[in-house]
Image 1 (cartoon, rainbow, N blue to C red):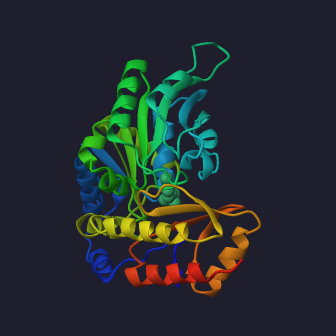
Image 2: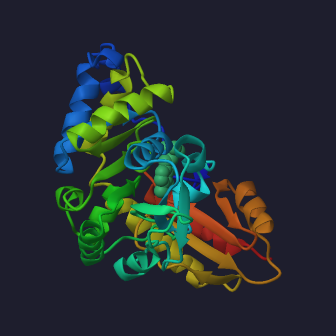
Length: 339
Ligand SMILES: *Cc1c(COP(=O)(O)O)cnc(C)c1O
Protein backbone atom coordinates (compact mmCIF):
# COMPACT_ATOMS: atom_id res chain seq x y z
CA UNK A 1 0.00 0.00 0.00
CA UNK A 2 1.25 3.49 -0.92
CA UNK A 3 -0.40 5.48 1.82
CA UNK A 4 -0.70 9.19 0.95
CA UNK A 5 -3.60 9.77 3.36
CA UNK A 6 -1.57 11.73 5.87
CA UNK A 7 1.90 12.06 7.36
CA UNK A 8 0.37 10.71 10.59
CA UNK A 9 0.29 7.14 9.19
CA UNK A 10 4.04 6.51 9.61
CA UNK A 11 5.20 3.67 11.81
CA UNK A 12 8.31 3.87 14.01
CA UNK A 13 11.52 2.81 12.29
CA UNK A 14 13.60 0.03 13.93
CA UNK A 15 16.02 2.64 15.31
CA UNK A 16 13.17 4.62 16.81
CA UNK A 17 11.62 1.51 18.36
CA UNK A 18 14.94 0.61 19.91
CA UNK A 19 15.29 4.12 21.37
CA UNK A 20 11.79 3.79 22.82
CA UNK A 21 12.50 0.37 24.35
CA UNK A 22 15.63 1.68 26.03
CA UNK A 23 14.11 4.88 27.41
CA UNK A 24 14.68 5.75 31.03
CA UNK A 25 11.26 6.53 32.50
CA UNK A 26 9.52 7.76 35.63
CA UNK A 27 6.18 9.24 36.64
CA UNK A 28 5.80 12.42 34.61
CA UNK A 29 2.86 13.74 36.64
CA UNK A 30 5.48 14.10 39.41
CA UNK A 31 7.92 15.51 36.80
CA UNK A 32 10.06 12.41 37.36
CA UNK A 33 10.37 11.12 33.81
CA UNK A 34 13.86 12.11 32.65
CA UNK A 35 13.14 11.35 28.99
CA UNK A 36 10.02 13.53 28.91
CA UNK A 37 11.95 16.32 30.61
CA UNK A 38 14.78 15.95 28.13
CA UNK A 39 12.38 16.25 25.19
CA UNK A 40 10.64 19.27 26.73
CA UNK A 41 13.91 21.03 27.50
CA UNK A 42 15.49 20.24 24.17
CA UNK A 43 12.42 21.37 22.23
CA UNK A 44 12.17 24.59 24.23
CA UNK A 45 15.84 25.38 23.60
CA UNK A 46 15.44 24.62 19.90
CA UNK A 47 12.66 27.22 19.60
CA UNK A 48 14.24 29.73 22.02
CA UNK A 49 11.40 29.30 24.51
CA UNK A 50 11.78 28.90 28.28
CA UNK A 51 9.83 25.70 28.83
CA UNK A 52 7.94 22.85 27.19
CA UNK A 53 5.08 20.46 27.88
CA UNK A 54 4.75 17.03 26.30
CA UNK A 55 1.16 16.36 25.20
CA UNK A 56 -0.57 13.28 23.77
CA UNK A 57 -1.71 15.15 20.63
CA UNK A 58 -1.35 18.36 18.67
CA UNK A 59 -5.00 19.06 19.27
CA UNK A 60 -4.47 18.98 23.02
CA UNK A 61 -1.38 21.20 22.74
CA UNK A 62 -3.34 23.79 20.73
CA UNK A 63 -6.38 23.61 23.00
CA UNK A 64 -4.23 24.13 26.09
CA UNK A 65 -2.62 27.14 24.42
CA UNK A 66 -6.03 28.67 23.63
CA UNK A 67 -7.16 28.08 27.22
CA UNK A 68 -4.07 29.61 28.84
CA UNK A 69 -3.88 32.63 26.51
CA UNK A 70 -7.55 33.65 26.79
CA UNK A 71 -10.49 34.27 29.13
CA UNK A 72 -14.13 33.47 28.27
CA UNK A 73 -15.84 35.97 25.93
CA UNK A 74 -12.58 36.73 24.16
CA UNK A 75 -11.81 35.83 20.57
CA UNK A 76 -8.97 34.47 18.48
CA UNK A 77 -8.05 35.81 15.05
CA UNK A 78 -7.08 33.05 12.61
CA UNK A 79 -7.46 31.87 9.04
CA UNK A 80 -10.74 30.21 8.07
CA UNK A 81 -8.92 27.00 7.10
CA UNK A 82 -7.18 26.69 10.51
CA UNK A 83 -6.90 23.30 12.17
CA UNK A 84 -8.20 24.87 15.42
CA UNK A 85 -11.41 25.79 13.55
CA UNK A 86 -11.80 22.88 11.12
CA UNK A 87 -10.55 19.82 12.97
CA UNK A 88 -10.62 20.38 16.72
CA UNK A 89 -14.34 19.75 17.31
CA UNK A 90 -15.13 23.38 18.27
CA UNK A 91 -12.93 22.79 21.32
CA UNK A 92 -12.22 26.55 21.53
CA UNK A 93 -15.88 27.04 22.58
CA UNK A 94 -16.06 23.89 24.72
CA UNK A 95 -12.84 24.26 26.71
CA UNK A 96 -12.29 28.02 26.70
CA UNK A 97 -15.67 29.70 26.11
CA UNK A 98 -14.17 31.83 23.36
CA UNK A 99 -14.96 32.61 19.74
CA UNK A 100 -12.88 32.62 16.60
CA UNK A 101 -12.90 35.42 14.06
CA UNK A 102 -12.14 33.77 10.74
CA UNK A 103 -10.04 35.63 8.21
CA UNK A 104 -9.74 34.82 4.51
CA UNK A 105 -6.07 34.26 3.95
CA UNK A 106 -4.24 33.26 0.81
CA UNK A 107 -3.84 29.47 0.86
CA UNK A 108 -4.11 29.56 4.64
CA UNK A 109 -1.67 32.45 5.14
CA UNK A 110 -2.97 35.65 6.78
CA UNK A 111 -1.24 39.03 6.83
CA UNK A 112 -0.46 41.61 9.51
CA UNK A 113 -2.64 44.37 8.01
CA UNK A 114 -5.56 42.04 7.55
CA UNK A 115 -5.32 40.82 11.15
CA UNK A 116 -5.00 44.34 12.56
CA UNK A 117 -8.06 45.51 10.62
CA UNK A 118 -10.07 42.68 12.21
CA UNK A 119 -9.27 43.60 15.84
CA UNK A 120 -12.56 44.54 17.53
CA UNK A 121 -13.06 47.97 19.04
CA UNK A 122 -13.75 47.84 22.78
CA UNK A 123 -17.52 47.74 23.21
CA UNK A 124 -19.63 45.90 25.76
CA UNK A 125 -21.38 43.99 23.00
CA UNK A 126 -18.28 42.79 21.16
CA UNK A 127 -15.93 39.91 21.89
CA UNK A 128 -12.47 41.05 22.89
CA UNK A 129 -9.71 40.14 20.40
CA UNK A 130 -6.75 38.88 22.40
CA UNK A 131 -4.93 36.14 20.50
CA UNK A 132 -3.67 35.45 16.97
CA UNK A 133 -3.05 31.88 15.80
CA UNK A 134 -0.91 31.19 12.73
CA UNK A 135 -0.66 27.71 11.22
CA UNK A 136 2.77 26.98 9.73
CA UNK A 137 2.71 25.09 7.45
CA UNK A 138 -0.97 25.65 6.71
CA UNK A 139 -2.44 22.19 6.20
CA UNK A 140 -5.71 22.97 4.44
CA UNK A 141 -3.94 25.78 2.61
CA UNK A 142 -1.85 23.09 0.88
CA UNK A 143 1.22 22.89 3.13
CA UNK A 144 2.00 26.57 2.59
CA UNK A 145 4.69 28.39 4.54
CA UNK A 146 4.71 31.77 6.28
CA UNK A 147 7.51 33.99 4.95
CA UNK A 148 9.77 35.27 7.72
CA UNK A 149 9.00 38.94 7.01
CA UNK A 150 5.27 38.26 7.38
CA UNK A 151 5.77 36.56 10.75
CA UNK A 152 7.92 39.50 11.88
CA UNK A 153 5.29 42.01 10.73
CA UNK A 154 2.57 40.08 12.56
CA UNK A 155 4.72 39.91 15.70
CA UNK A 156 5.36 43.67 15.65
CA UNK A 157 1.64 44.35 15.18
CA UNK A 158 0.73 41.95 18.02
CA UNK A 159 3.15 43.68 20.40
CA UNK A 160 1.77 47.10 19.42
CA UNK A 161 -1.87 46.02 19.80
CA UNK A 162 -1.24 43.80 22.86
CA UNK A 163 -2.30 40.52 21.29
CA UNK A 164 -0.69 37.20 22.15
CA UNK A 165 0.70 35.13 19.26
CA UNK A 166 0.50 31.32 19.09
CA UNK A 167 1.75 29.18 16.23
CA UNK A 168 0.22 25.84 15.34
CA UNK A 169 3.53 24.36 14.24
CA UNK A 170 2.36 20.81 13.65
CA UNK A 171 4.63 20.88 10.57
CA UNK A 172 7.01 23.66 11.60
CA UNK A 173 10.13 21.73 10.52
CA UNK A 174 8.70 21.45 7.01
CA UNK A 175 8.22 25.23 7.07
CA UNK A 176 11.77 25.86 8.32
CA UNK A 177 13.19 23.65 5.62
CA UNK A 178 11.27 25.37 2.83
CA UNK A 179 11.74 28.96 3.99
CA UNK A 180 15.32 28.51 5.22
CA UNK A 181 14.66 30.03 8.65
CA UNK A 182 15.69 28.39 11.92
CA UNK A 183 13.32 27.10 14.63
CA UNK A 184 15.08 29.48 17.01
CA UNK A 185 14.37 32.52 14.86
CA UNK A 186 10.69 31.60 14.49
CA UNK A 187 10.37 30.78 18.18
CA UNK A 188 11.62 34.26 19.13
CA UNK A 189 8.65 35.82 17.33
CA UNK A 190 6.08 33.81 19.31
CA UNK A 191 4.46 33.63 22.73
CA UNK A 192 3.84 29.92 22.24
CA UNK A 193 4.11 27.16 19.64
CA UNK A 194 2.85 23.59 19.35
CA UNK A 195 5.03 21.10 17.48
CA UNK A 196 3.96 17.59 16.37
CA UNK A 197 6.28 14.60 16.51
CA UNK A 198 3.66 12.30 15.01
CA UNK A 199 3.49 13.98 11.59
CA UNK A 200 6.47 14.03 9.24
CA UNK A 201 8.91 13.43 12.08
CA UNK A 202 7.58 9.87 12.27
CA UNK A 203 6.97 9.34 16.00
CA UNK A 204 3.88 7.30 16.90
CA UNK A 205 2.44 9.77 19.43
CA UNK A 206 3.08 13.20 20.85
CA UNK A 207 3.41 16.95 20.51
CA UNK A 208 5.07 19.61 22.62
CA UNK A 209 3.69 22.97 23.63
CA UNK A 210 6.42 25.58 24.18
CA UNK A 211 6.27 28.98 25.87
CA UNK A 212 7.39 31.01 28.88
CA UNK A 213 7.93 29.34 32.25
CA UNK A 214 4.73 30.88 33.66
CA UNK A 215 2.72 29.92 30.57
CA UNK A 216 3.87 26.29 30.75
CA UNK A 217 3.25 26.11 34.52
CA UNK A 218 -0.40 27.00 33.86
CA UNK A 219 -0.47 24.73 30.79
CA UNK A 220 0.51 21.79 33.01
CA UNK A 221 -2.63 22.33 35.10
CA UNK A 222 -4.82 22.54 32.01
CA UNK A 223 -3.22 19.40 30.55
CA UNK A 224 -4.06 17.58 33.78
CA UNK A 225 -7.72 18.64 33.79
CA UNK A 226 -7.99 17.49 30.17
CA UNK A 227 -6.75 14.08 31.24
CA UNK A 228 -3.40 14.49 29.51
CA UNK A 229 -1.16 13.94 32.54
CA UNK A 230 0.74 10.81 31.49
CA UNK A 231 2.87 8.60 33.71
CA UNK A 232 5.84 6.70 32.13
CA UNK A 233 5.50 8.75 28.95
CA UNK A 234 9.25 8.65 28.40
CA UNK A 235 8.76 5.67 26.09
CA UNK A 236 6.88 8.05 23.78
CA UNK A 237 9.14 11.05 24.36
CA UNK A 238 12.11 8.88 23.35
CA UNK A 239 10.57 8.60 19.89
CA UNK A 240 10.43 12.39 19.70
CA UNK A 241 14.09 12.73 20.71
CA UNK A 242 15.05 10.10 18.15
CA UNK A 243 13.09 11.99 15.49
CA UNK A 244 14.91 15.24 16.30
CA UNK A 245 18.23 13.46 15.89
CA UNK A 246 17.49 11.41 12.80
CA UNK A 247 14.35 12.41 10.95
CA UNK A 248 14.35 16.18 10.48
CA UNK A 249 16.66 16.67 7.49
CA UNK A 250 15.01 13.86 5.56
CA UNK A 251 11.79 15.93 5.35
CA UNK A 252 13.45 17.47 2.27
CA UNK A 253 12.82 14.17 0.44
CA UNK A 254 9.12 14.44 1.20
CA UNK A 255 9.11 17.89 -0.38
CA UNK A 256 10.79 16.55 -3.53
CA UNK A 257 8.24 13.72 -3.65
CA UNK A 258 5.32 16.14 -3.34
CA UNK A 259 6.69 18.21 -6.22
CA UNK A 260 7.06 15.05 -8.33
CA UNK A 261 3.40 14.18 -7.71
CA UNK A 262 2.33 17.76 -8.54
CA UNK A 263 4.30 17.71 -11.79
CA UNK A 264 2.66 14.41 -12.78
CA UNK A 265 -0.80 15.80 -11.94
CA UNK A 266 -0.13 18.88 -14.06
CA UNK A 267 0.06 16.62 -17.15
CA UNK A 268 -3.33 15.00 -16.57
CA UNK A 269 -6.54 16.07 -18.36
CA UNK A 270 -8.79 15.20 -15.44
CA UNK A 271 -7.00 17.56 -13.03
CA UNK A 272 -8.46 21.08 -13.04
CA UNK A 273 -6.08 22.85 -10.66
CA UNK A 274 -3.24 22.16 -8.23
CA UNK A 275 -2.52 24.38 -5.20
CA UNK A 276 1.04 25.69 -5.12
CA UNK A 277 3.20 22.93 -3.61
CA UNK A 278 5.78 24.12 -1.10
CA UNK A 279 6.25 21.26 1.33
CA UNK A 280 4.82 17.73 1.70
CA UNK A 281 1.15 18.35 0.84
CA UNK A 282 -0.45 18.29 -2.60
CA UNK A 283 -4.06 19.47 -2.92
CA UNK A 284 -5.74 19.34 -6.30
CA UNK A 285 -9.17 19.74 -7.86
CA UNK A 286 -10.75 17.43 -10.43
CA UNK A 287 -12.55 18.69 -13.53
CA UNK A 288 -16.33 18.82 -13.55
CA UNK A 289 -17.88 15.41 -14.05
CA UNK A 290 -15.07 13.56 -12.27
CA UNK A 291 -15.74 12.87 -8.59
CA UNK A 292 -13.23 12.33 -5.84
CA UNK A 293 -15.00 9.06 -5.02
CA UNK A 294 -14.29 7.80 -8.54
CA UNK A 295 -10.58 8.62 -8.48
CA UNK A 296 -10.10 7.48 -4.86
CA UNK A 297 -11.73 4.11 -5.65
CA UNK A 298 -9.42 3.65 -8.66
CA UNK A 299 -6.37 4.58 -6.60
CA UNK A 300 -7.36 2.26 -3.78
CA UNK A 301 -7.79 -0.63 -6.25
CA UNK A 302 -4.23 0.09 -7.35
CA UNK A 303 -2.85 0.23 -3.81
CA UNK A 304 -2.70 4.01 -3.48
CA UNK A 305 -4.52 5.66 -0.57
CA UNK A 306 -5.46 9.33 -0.48
CA UNK A 307 -8.11 11.48 1.16
CA UNK A 308 -11.01 13.57 -0.12
CA UNK A 309 -10.66 17.25 0.75
CA UNK A 310 -13.98 18.26 -0.81
CA UNK A 311 -16.39 16.94 -3.48
CA UNK A 312 -13.88 17.75 -6.25
CA UNK A 313 -10.71 17.95 -4.19
CA UNK A 314 -8.09 15.43 -3.14
CA UNK A 315 -5.08 15.66 -0.83
CA UNK A 316 -1.84 13.68 -1.02
CA UNK A 317 0.67 13.86 1.83
CA UNK A 318 4.22 12.51 1.50
CA UNK A 319 6.17 11.12 4.47
CA UNK A 320 8.97 8.78 5.52
CA UNK A 321 7.06 5.57 4.76
CA UNK A 322 6.71 6.55 1.08
CA UNK A 323 9.94 6.20 -0.89
CA UNK A 324 10.95 7.28 -4.39
CA UNK A 325 9.86 4.01 -6.02
CA UNK A 326 6.43 4.26 -4.41
CA UNK A 327 6.06 7.84 -5.64
CA UNK A 328 6.95 6.75 -9.18
CA UNK A 329 4.42 3.93 -8.93
CA UNK A 330 1.72 6.35 -7.72
CA UNK A 331 2.53 8.66 -10.65
CA UNK A 332 2.05 5.76 -13.08
CA UNK A 333 -1.25 4.79 -11.46
CA UNK A 334 -2.50 8.38 -11.77
CA UNK A 335 -1.56 8.32 -15.45
CA UNK A 336 -3.64 5.19 -16.04
CA UNK A 337 -6.90 6.63 -14.64
CA UNK A 338 -9.56 7.11 -17.33
CA UNK A 339 -12.64 8.92 -16.00
C1 LIG B 1 -2.27 17.21 12.71
C2 LIG B 1 -2.39 18.62 13.05
C3 LIG B 1 -2.59 19.04 14.36
C4 LIG B 1 -2.70 18.10 15.53
O1 LIG B 1 -3.36 16.96 15.29
P1 LIG B 1 -3.41 15.70 16.27
O2 LIG B 1 -3.94 14.66 15.37
O3 LIG B 1 -4.33 16.08 17.36
O4 LIG B 1 -2.04 15.42 16.76
C5 LIG B 1 -2.66 20.39 14.61
N1 LIG B 1 -2.54 21.28 13.62
C6 LIG B 1 -2.33 20.93 12.35
C7 LIG B 1 -2.15 21.97 11.31
C8 LIG B 1 -2.27 19.59 12.01
O5 LIG B 1 -2.07 19.24 10.74
